[in-house]
Image (spheres, rainbow, N blue to C red):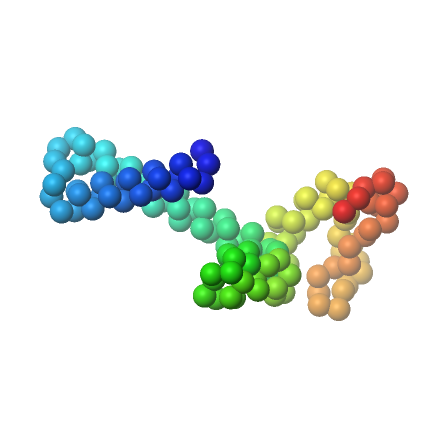
Length: 128
């Protein structure tokens, strides 16, 4: 499902939920619409939480630098602020490891994120 289909589905469910609240929809259809709306709300909350964690791992605003954002004004791309180290290790470090780049736990970096070992990536011919 692409973003347009998801948006269209969300709008349809929102309109149907408004009809349910206004009393224009009855019975089984009403129950199904309410359940679908609750599932959508739950999915949205889960996706929003995951997006916030990934943004924190990358040191980004939750909009990832969209120009319309009221929080960062479009400046919040990855690296905009200090990444959350534990989330960085959870989400970003496995990707870097897959590319042959590893975090060195022994060598502290000036801002407490550990230095990256680019030697492994270079030795394997990985390009970043």
